Length: 153
Image (cartoon, rainbow, N blue to C red; front, side, top):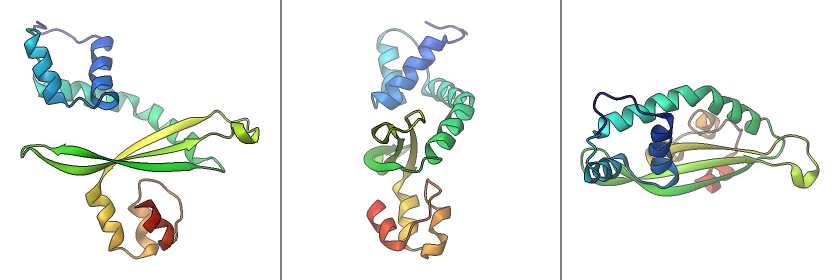
């Protein structure tokens, strides 16, 4: 049991990997810890993930800037059911990934990928928005015409 303990970087990293790489929600991690005799509230786990995310934000922005500065950008969105807190219903979440990789064209820049998450509700607003206003709603900062927006959704 972690009684008023300080979580190690390894434990916090494991919670983050379980959450994002292995798609294991915090409530399931809480149950797994409880079965092992460790009392860790979901709010504690969420606090660790949030603080780690805040500490990693400068790195995320550096990667984003590097990726988005590419002359060629590969992008994709993948849908995934996302549990809506409090009512056991799911929403459709979208995982956007943007890849910069100029190696096939003998580019010198380091390859990189930047991920962003958004909810479908944000994307539904795009359908009801004039093309000139779409850039402010999209999770990236690229000028798109209406046909490209339709394809991206």
